[in-house]
Image (cartoon, rainbow over all chains, first blue to last red; front, side, top):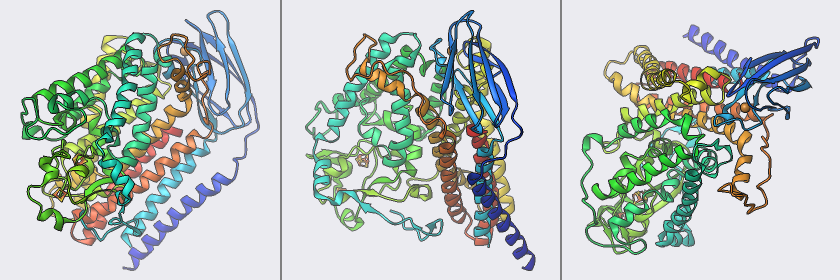
Length: 151
Length: 475
Ligand code: SF4
Ligand code: SF4
Ligand SMILES: [Cu+2]
């Protein structure tokens, strides 16, 4: 009986801790590493980007060259709400400071064919605190419900 | 209603009901034969425009097509985010697809035809009176989603098949057989409406007990006997109630009601007449699996998968179909089976069958799946909702500007908080799944100790699924 109590208590504490860390995480902005300048060359063709995912750190100054390999394409960056476009033989550029952390989708902004609405890529701005906050919350909820049920 | 003393999260009384039809004007409106005819006619009008726009849109890129945008952004998102979780099968209430078959059977659009209905009136085979045909039909429909959601003409064909199918099946089989067992959009509505916060139910059994013949089932001069073949006087879950409002009209004692209720109470219903079944379990697996595959294909950055889904090459397309079918029909159920098996082993129970454990716990995937689809829908609506404003003003791309919104450029909104929204929705519905998982555990295992131990694997499974979708949405 004693052992069961200890296990339950430990689980509850762990669950509570997860939720606590998550909540603190929401409130505190992550400390950025020293920012760098980053250059990316993104090639667009119907209906994807190469590379499809680009990774930077919070605070980095990011420059993207958008090069079209077939028809005209665009690039709209979720969250940052900026865009550029590229036409065959004419590239587009986008420069921004990656101050918002998390994963943001970038989408084609120039109708380029039937799959155009699904032409997307990802920008990962580390640290992805959003993911960790929600994952910790999930695990916290799970552990706490386990304790509530098993007690 | 099945009395249960269990409370959701230990606090929500699952027997709580608030009768919306206790207000006289509400009941009067719902008893009028204009309801639901009026909304049906309105939707008929909208769908005629959709069909025309989808037909004339041909194979062009669909992101400025009225048919594509209204069906796949507005309609689908409304269904998943509001209609089904809030109002159960409210869509079926106002759905225009079966109006021609109703008309043919009844020979009347407005008034009530008493006596035998027209058509051949065959009975649908007992063996197929479940979700299996719809499960397969829906899965097969999603093989083509790479075309339907982007090519206007493909959407036209899909809607055409549904409308024509409803008509032909209505001529051969009785009443709403098509809606009950065949319509591709019926299955997930039926499944997820079990979570809905609204229900049509009878009030007082004592009144029904002594009422013969039961006019809600056989019909009278005020309305038809339940077109969805329910027994309104004692049915227990929303799955197959089309909310057509006939039973409100045919009950001479106003003993049928529309209630507000806590979400999800039907998940616990298990009666002889409405047992929990493998067909509904598989529907839940399929819906969950499709959400994963769709996310990878349509909201992920993997171009090779997009090429497979849109049929850039035949082998690639066949590969997609094979993967999609296996993933939904075998892999997801297989993984779930492992956890159901662990549940049985851990519980130490020997008299409940593994099949019962597997089936009953699968109902936790109803809140889980709804949350997943809501998150998915947010990811469609916020970036692409602005297309709707545009096509409303110029439905046929003829240069019209009906509402002055035809020139609005494509403008994603709130994309910065989208991930937070999706994560929050996911966690709320995860909590519902866990809450009901525990109640189901107590229902499955009579012994409290067994229930506790048997619940742990299911809790683990739900946690893992939530983490997978978190990774998809914000990872
Ligand atoms: S008509 Fe009304 S009272 Fe009669 S059986 Fe139906 S619900 Fe009960
Ligand atoms: S008549 Fe049948 S389908 Fe229509 S609302 Fe009543 S129970 Fe539901
Ligand atoms: Cu493009």
